[in-house]
Length: 252
Image (cartoon, rainbow, N blue to C red; front, side):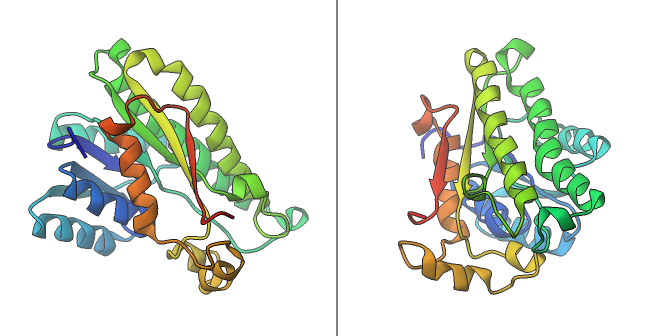
């Protein structure tokens, strides 16, 4: 991908799954990468070590994207380390155990929306402050992680998660239009059944294997396949693409 050498990328939730794959692929493309994590320092440091072993530059930084204080500190740390910001991947997010809406607690709903919706909006706010030409920046790109669940609705499983991703879809379109004249492109990807650790965190470690059978392509996707789409959206090759949402779901 052209023009990526030396650019600075922040990936939230970069210690595992799609986030980790994005960090590694971005480093191969020449980005300097800030690898955000919430709790698993060892996993984040492994991603950093892999990048450095390949001759890239990266560092890990702990922050809860659902905390404004943490988000502010995270962006300041990226500036202190790399001197700026060119791209953001809003990847951090959570799921929960299978549940009907009439069984969901307020605490569950609050956590879901705080991390999956407010967190990406806070991070995008800080990125725009730094990248928008209106604010003295030189432009940049943001990719938000949505989900095909936003279209399917998650009935009987995780309607709250699906709703949070629908919010991300609306936010992506709105922000893309808001900053289109300011050199900042904003897009989303909507993965389908992807074989990552997120299923285990929701109490279904074998979900990707089981659900892969109902996908038209007859398999789950990989984190690397999603990362490739993210990197394209960040790249100069997608220079006329903003407000888009790429579904990466094997035809589901």
